[in-house]
Image 1: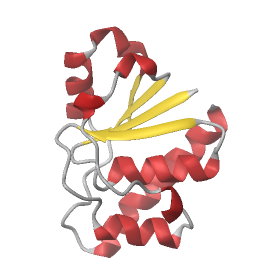
Image 2 (image 1 turned 135 degrees about the vertical axis):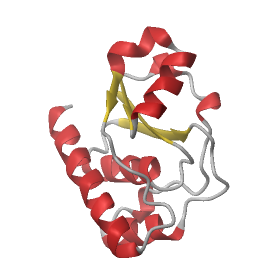
Image 3 (image 1 turned 135 degrees about the horizontal axis):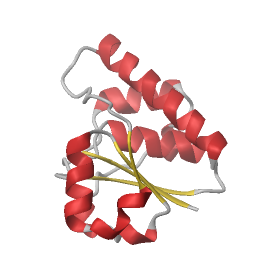
Image 4 (image 1 turned 60 degrees about the vertical axis):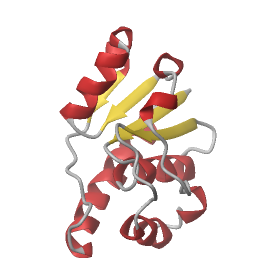
Length: 132
């Protein structure tokens, strides 16, 4: 089973989801990418991952979606509809593998607000972990 999480910069949402799923399900091959990869995973994401005991699973450097072979993944989670559109523009044959979570970007918001977004990600990842 291979799962890919996709957001904009691969700096907040998708790397956190990747780290949490790796923690919950070490038997699953998990990855993440951004439609426009940022240069680093941001501190608020690192802080939350550490709080959740998932920092050891958090990637160090964001990756761009362009380097991924989308059809290798069984499940592709897009954080927003716009990410789904990018995925389907690149690989329309993967349409039946894409799920959209509708999670807003926590980049540049206060930590308390970002933490609420991260809690939503954690809840969705926990549900996904049980369903795989």
